[in-house]
Amino acid sequence: MKKEYRIKKNHEFSRIFEKGKSSANRQFVIYVMDHKEAAHFRVGLTVSKKMGNAVTRNRIKRLLREALRELEDQLMDGRDYIIIARKPVVQMNYVDIKKSLKHVMNVAGVLKKHDVKK
Image (cartoon, rainbow, N blue to C red; front, top):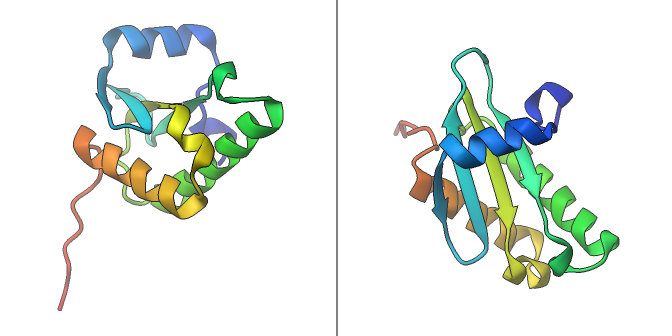
């Protein structure tokens, strides 16, 4: 994921937590907030220390970034997203993580509607 697509600053995380809308499933919580000035979306990832050691947390973040890379053409632009991983993610493989992430994004209503041509 490119640097301009990431949220890194603590005050940006705080602002999105306060003013954003949240949706969740058993594996993820997603906060969404409009960011009109941006031409593209931005994403911040959070994996708690309760999930495991640094190796485990970094693995989860790598898998999340890869899933987001594959879903980026379906995400709405001009929004900020924060994705918080929950405990069940530790046991999941990449396919399950991507499926669950897509589900929570669908619940949040942030996926673009694609027209299927026949």
